Length: 420
Ligand SMILES: Cc1ncc(COP(=O)(O)O)c(C=O)c1O
Image (cartoon, rainbow, N blue to C red; front, side):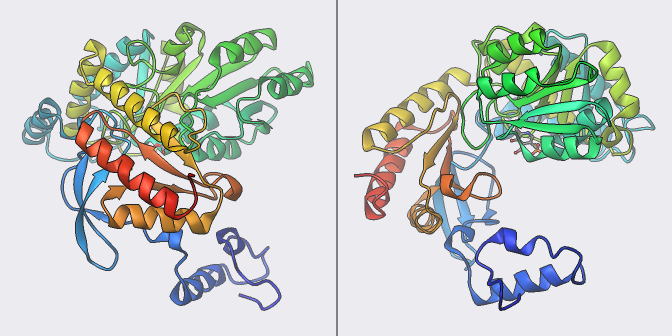
């Protein structure tokens, strides 16, 4: 830390332009955090003492243990604790042991892995699907396998970090359009040189920090006009959005026109992993050329067994989506009535836009210490002036829990002048 450039924000630590030892930034951050803890960091990395349900015990960093209503989990349909899912995991542990011990192409594929890939393909109506060990790394693998130097990838600015990392690794040209701004997207597409035919538009289906949806109908029309492929990341859409929970593309009625359907197995599916659904040619190509598939050990069979049950439940649409959407409506109506700015959410993610990091940290700490767990979202996930609290709704929240949550949000929202 130099005297000329006092450190106020986290981004100040990340680069020293090659002018210092690479460990210097770690020492600087350590010194900073020993002298002060910004309020918005207090609620990070806490321990959850039990299964992920809508009511959990947490351990604070000062070791205080208390109960909270959980609105900080992506397990929207509570499938992490669904009896059928848990039972399948237990049975498969006895049958297969707890890990695979190899990458998929060597010795890391079981009949359960193939069954899950087939179910995912059936869910989306594609020819096949390929599993990745992690949601983050799957995006990196897919994008960097398909795109390379000379190609162009056109991104919504609010896309997930894993998409941007995949783009960076690919070596392709990267272009950004303003969040959900189709005029801006078209302006970019119009200017692409005719000689550049390797073109991919990538977008989150549901934006993870906003809860709003990519306008896929318009993206599809532009992609056809300007000869681009489309990749969609359904991480937060699967099981939640669309008339049968098949995601954002179903919501817009354009599933068949999406070239690459990507999703994670960590949010509604409740476990870990990623998948890409598409044609047999595409999935076969990815098995050989996506390095995060080829060089990375596959998902343990017990987890895959649980995910097989998850996809059966989602195919039947009996996983609890209707109850979830009722809870979302209830919370959203309550929050709007209190005067919160909830952005343009159309999913189970409800942002409360605050725009002041100090207020945000204090608000989240008070809520949590008094029984409501939420996520603090600021840089680098969103711009500081758009920092926000993120509420994730679960299908198992009771009316009593939601009323208690709304009361706490009202009390502390007023305390910090976030609402009138
Ligand atoms: C849109 C999106 N894509 C990908 C990921 C990465 O998924 P995972 O956490 O399963 O690695 C996330 C996680 O937050 C996400 O929100």
